Image (tube, rainbow, N blue to C red):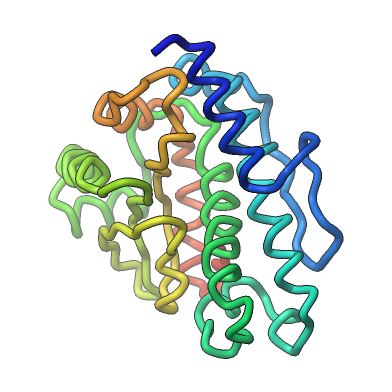
Length: 235
């Protein structure tokens, strides 16, 4: 499959999600966060074209669809997204599925942009100590994380969660589900939907998972770890 055909397929997929112009979203309480760095910041690990499609098309589509669901109104609309996802039963049944899928997608991607844009390397400080304590070593975490991501059937995510005591755990979720739906907090995670990597890596998900560590921002993850222990980490 050529790169041009792959791009056309991903662009068509973005169109099917219901988004048109770059960054276009429906009016409502939810907004698309700006990408906190240039599209090419993660080159060569993640190409700029993938970043542009992923943020400006796919993430924008989740926000657009979430705002459309929010148009039904109700008290749930005014709550923080993490609280909405932790209490989906309070969302009207008519839009609950849309909120689960698109609210989860919005939360997952908001986290995803924040913890990339770095230069990889090794974790430092408290988060490094927590990784050593809960996974044995950084290398053991990478192996476990990559293997879990590789085993996700179809589309989904692999996450490291963190509780208020600072304890870490690894989990996967299908589609756009998130540990937030179980009242947990995400330290970091990797997107293993094909739209996250297919232009560059095609079907080589294992290669993508291994390379992804090169763009992790451990400073941002360390800040998230501190926020989790302070009880202020949201998405």
